[in-house]
Image (cartoon, rainbow, N blue to C red; front, side):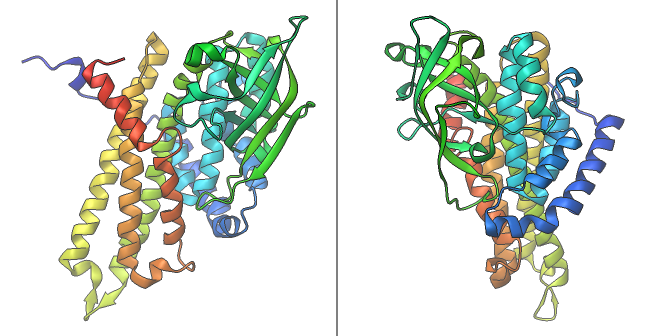
Length: 396
């Protein structure tokens, strides 16, 4: 019996470099981020100081080549970093994910050499903040329904961009944005073009900052374009290539969000484990009781299954980067499973804590709120199921 390509055994081992990174990031996250996470969650303030420190460590462009200001590491390094940062605070990991997966990757894969040097370096180093803008008020999962427009001027030197984009992570502080908008609306998805936006230029403004349920320190807002003049040399990947770029980048982003969800779940699980060992009821630690043991077993199993799916997606992505192709299904499966595992684990961890879990004096309620968004951004769970099923059914 010959195993099919789909089910061949997978192998993934941490190198010494990965181990060193993991130790350094874990120490940083627990020392610098965890102590201030609740405070930032309460205030909703953007954690610029610790974000700059992540940049100094090379984390804000961890997969970017060193010549572009990055750390020159691989997808596994990004995943390990995301998990440890998310365990300390999901908001920080959201900022990190957008910078790496959605902003830097698109320019690295589709940009010219000039664009890479000008647009990646300051963001990968953490000196500036990057953002990614696809969603609009009436255009979420259906990107072909965009209302924003970019029109080439008579001289052919600039595109004039007009419209409003919504739910842009890091937008209130972003210096540079990868923007997707229509250049040929009649062509629907094929009429989307990607632009590199300098937010300091005239015609760009920021709308209201969203008051969110979770990841509150990760600032999110609308952005508005009013005859914003974007030079033609700031078109990324060619006119009409925007949808392809957006979907390719989202594959990478979904691996990042899977890792974020796993980090949140791990933090909640570890808190529940400690509580189950220490909290006593009816004369014994509650961990001695079978109902609690069942919860612990199910939580741990989901976490480890999620980790395996993430590692499978990491291997698929690295293989695709080396030989071409996509890893859409693997990324979607990891994102779908881990986001739903995070919902389950945070809910069960809160239940194990009882009334204390519901109190803001404990971090459980923050983990619970932060986990909720992972089933929405970078494609909802419903979209992930559609992506996975259509691939399995051979549908376009």
